[in-house]
Amino acid sequence: MLVETKTTEDFLLKLVQKKIIFPAQKEPELFFFSKDIQKVKKIVELKQLGFTDYEITKISREVGFPHEKDDGGVKLYSIGEFCKKYNLSSRRIKYWEEIGLFFPAVRSKGGVRLYKDSLIIHINFIKNLQKLGFELCEIKSIIESSDTQKIENRIKEIHDTINEIKPIIKNIKKLK
Image (cartoon, rainbow, N blue to C red; front, side):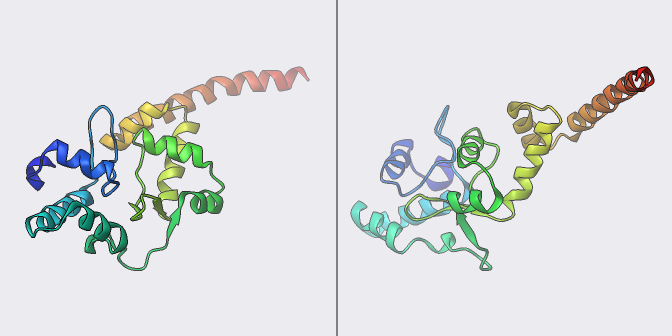
């Protein structure tokens, strides 16, 4: 991002502190959403035009930047609304977001996480992988690499276990 926006890390940290941009991840290193690149470029342009930090902060919070507008009228939900609609725990959603399983669709000008309905598909995928016995770190790896082989192997293991248990169940039923 530093190269694309021709900025320094200190400049980006300053924008984060002023709550103009919000990193997707802070540790071990700063990681930003691709939409933030456009925002930082606009901020750099405004600086070059002579706008002060105060004016840029005000523009960012009160007006926003063109790319921040939602396209197509898709409804966005706060974390509370989203969790209530889908009967989810906001604590779990925040944790999954924190460890990088997914990110909010956007953040409001005030920094509030906003989610789209389509995220529920992703959440259900994560829940199903958990039901198959995957740990969250394994799920993150699967999501990042789109590695379906791990899932197929786990399903095969489960089928093998079922096949091992079937005769045991059959024997137990005979004893009744």
